[in-house]
Image (cartoon, rainbow, N blue to C red; front, side, top):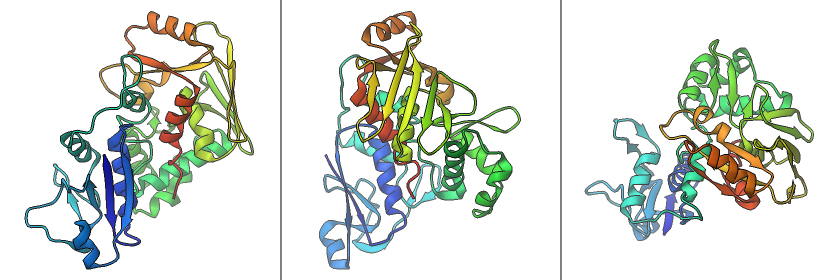
Length: 324
């Protein structure tokens, strides 16, 4: 499928539309392109009824009755009545399903979308929305973790939240409700994916930064991709306790042992990633121990992925998180 996002130059909602399309795809195969429309004639030719317009193989599934080509700003109303500058992820996913875009299958009983769901909020991604100060505060939290290895206190985030006319507590509560981070009983940050404020099985030493803990194996792999820095990941096989090390540098991560894999699992029933999948995404020294762990935990459906796929999931999940 070809997915086209039509936009006028410098439309502030075009990046949001592309981000939501990518989240709705959740690993399904499609070509996404951003096309700038410069004048009314081009809008008429391409079928743009306001910026941004999303086309699925040339068809606008969100076109209102009587819509005419236009280079004006376009707004979308969600099912609950909320207005946004782009279709929401649920609406986009429904449109993709209606257009017949198939899921992308992989070996085993799970599909690629399942792997992304385990670390990406049900396919919605880990990049917080720009509105209401969510992205600015979330990025400030993540950068603080990367620089210090610790979670920032809410007071440190007040100036960032104030730019959106909110308090840090208000923004952090919303980020927690949307599962971009978790808070403890006192309202302090316990985790901000990919980082954990408490020690875990996965330790990451960032070159030029801090030594940090990650929530899971995929999160650990996502840290160097997100920061654009070299890092050394140290973990252990849950079955044998043997070490697994990933040295990310010079563009080609080195895994030790070379046969190491990642099990990507998720408990059924829903809930925050910290509860349903973070302890089920681990490094293993090889497929033998990964299969042994899966056999001992039949309540955790999932599958084994190799190094290349694990790195791909991590980069896709966390790579865009700190982008402007």
